[in-house]
Image (cartoon, rainbow, N blue to C red; front, top):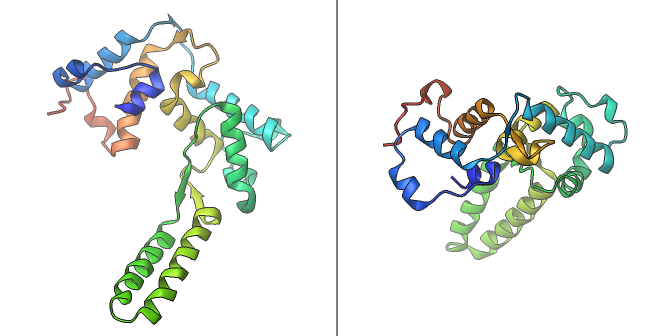
Length: 206
């Protein structure tokens, strides 16, 4: 629930969570805690413009060429990727959390680390260099080998608008009720892997 609290700038009481039974009930609680004028607009679109402006200010001056389908790899070269994202996060005022370790690399490094650790108990002359190598490779992957968890600027805007709903809006005194319910649904879909069609109002948390 922490990500919901952060996104919509609310706090749940423990008693509310204990009494919560359905997805519809959760949405009702969230909406009851949010104040603001009703407005029918698109927060994802507003998030896109904020991200585009942040990119333009920090690392990519030709913002007019940045479109929703622009690939993040096209904007951020591998060697300077992490630094550029940190600058954009500083400009936006929140973390994007868009890096993830490459799947195959993570598996190989895990196997190397475990095998080296086991080898320490049998032959430290082999196990110790193996551990040193695995640590060095892990440090290298963490610095250079991470990949984006989203591919395009548009996908990033969608992620930001559901994880930082009010930070994404140009006017934080307004809200779109139907959109908020959809964003809550998306948090469950992308965060917990629940099928969207299962998240009806009557969907039970029991």
